Image (cartoon, rainbow over all chains, first blue to last red; front, side):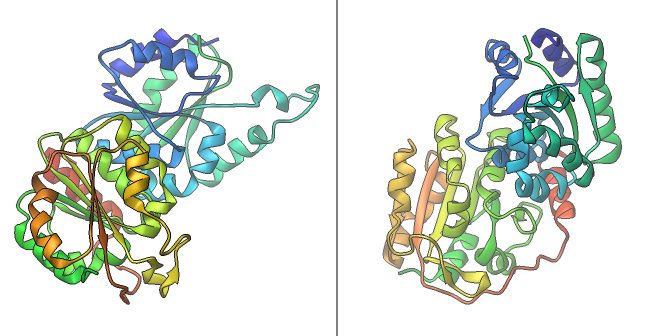
Length: 164
Length: 189
């Protein structure tokens, strides 16, 4: 399990100014704490492709945005991601909910196909990623910020359970 | 109907230090008038994402006016951006929608709803309050200062004549345009 307050502390260490995205069941606990936090502005968008465009604008304007969406929205956002954050070489960290992660286990009754599409898509699109499973993994957020600074393009941090 | 080239020339003559984000059939005509560090051609950038990108710029730089010259087809590709703009209103943002009912740079195929869609009504329905439609040059001349000085978020629909612009090809690749803009706005790359 990963806790919202630990994630937000990591955001603050990295100087995150804006979280751009759309809440879902996995991220709602994080959004709820973020909405109460005066140091980081939450910007809701109508569709996930907008998140990458808006975050890219924020970055070019001197801010430190982070995109927070679900993997379903990431798939929908393909060309928005490619055309803005990727093509503009924005060092953007995206925190993405890994919906369906547990349905990929052999004994799961039914596969949520977004899970089986997700990591192959990240690899095909040349996006480095790591996975948060517990609070012990929180340092991976800092590592992702370091990574995007090195490569001048986006990287992802995935979470597999509801953030509480 | 408006002639977009006339409108753009008047915009360029009036413009001082605003960021201008252009796209599709307006991008190259604008670049011929101005292609400096505060001009950003949203080309090779995901069609439909000029306005939301520009909105992020305006959010980051509240001291500076950001004007987006968007198309009707581009607006249709990301209509939700109008709602995003309404829920977080930015006084320094102007969105121009050039409405000629076609995908001009691919040969003037009609956009969905060509001749039927009222973009101003959609913008108002999204919750935006300062919305205008300009149909002729006299109106344009009267409203030219509004583009630069009016409290935003402003949506201004230009009803323009059909044209024959080819696919835009900016001089610099997009990442160089992006980093030039960042360097100008922020002073760092």
